[in-house]
Image 1 (cartoon, rainbow, N blue to C red):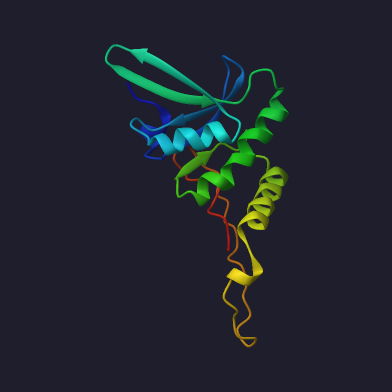
Image 2: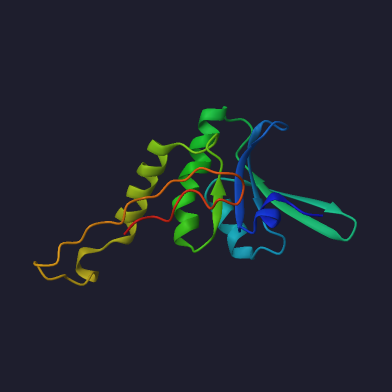
Length: 148
C-alpha cells in the first residue's frame, strides 16, 4: 500500500479530496508519532485504515467546515510543520497565501524573544531571504521554508 507522501518522497502531502470532501494530509508510511501528534494539535483529524497487515494513517480537516475554512486550517498548519523540520507539499488548490503569512507572523511572534536573540552589528543589515514559491506537481516541496 502506498500513498502520495510515499510516492513523492515527502513527509506530508496536503491536497483536496473529492470524497469525503475535505482537505487531506497524507503522511509517509512509518511517519514518526511526533508528526501525527503535531497534525492532531494543529486541528487536523487522524484516521487509520487497516488493509491486511499494513496500517495507513492520514489526517483530514474537520468535515463540518466549509472548504474555505478547511483551507485555512491546513494552511495555518504549514509553518509549524516546516519549523519542525518536515518536508511537505501543499497543492495550490488548498494553499491560501494570506492565511500562510498570518500563520508565519504568529509563529515568529511566539518563538522570538528579543533578549534571547544575539545582536548584530549595525553595519550588517539583515535582510530576510525571499520566499520562493514554485507551485508544481506532487512532491514539489511547496511552499518554501519560512524565511528568517
